[in-house]
Image 1 (cartoon, rainbow, N blue to C red):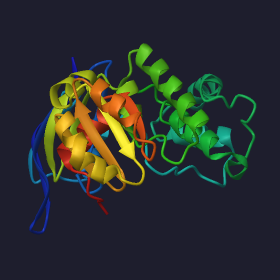
Image 2 (cartoon, rainbow, N blue to C red):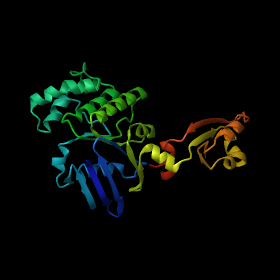
Image 3 (cartoon, rainbow, N blue to C red):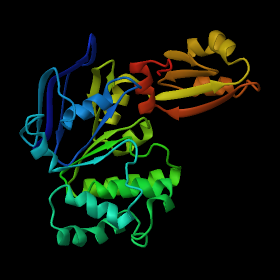
Image 4 (cartoon, helix red, strand yellow):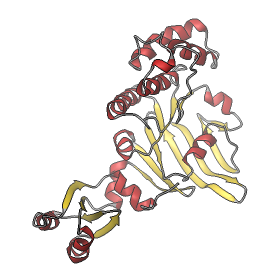
Length: 303
């Protein structure tokens, strides 16, 4: 069953086409990731899917309902975790959940019945009376996630849910998101953390310049685009080493900053040679999703 289907979606601002005819769908119970550099069109895509921005062309259907025409009805079945926390600082933790639940027309006794479970889910069971200013960044993020669940949604939009969090908080959020998937919830995730996408997403699409460059399962994309072994070489003389040995010993060799990336099916000759080069340091690792992302969208800085 498809919870969201997008066909030939387009959006322009003046002469600038921000979304250039993209297609994707979300199946019930999966985590679907949308990745891309800054300016790729991810946020605009989310706003279009939520019915907050009108498209210039194409079709969006959420739970079979046309968006934006029936966006209000469709949004009754979704939750949204925005990129920036927008909790009300004038209310306590419990009051934030209570007020948000009223937006969905839920009876107050039903909202109050759901709140203890949501606070437990967020690890905030003892903080219901706390003011928002008293919470850490990780607590605020978990509360924002709990708030998105107040209406028991089938589909949850998560816009960079762990940005700005420390590793411990990120891992806790990941655990909560996996729990939601185990409950059969559908997740639509945007993130700049490739390890996050690789851990959570059943499928993902990589966007650039308003177009979807590729789509598939993380491991499938890694196998499709990248040699299985990567050796990162850095230190004084790394570039000279690449010219005299690295480029000949690997299928593909790239330079970013002070680091040389060697992509290969057999890293043993490269590693063996580097062990005899005292001025160089290296990291030998398997290929990952970040390698795919950089190959398809480029290594230059985006603003």
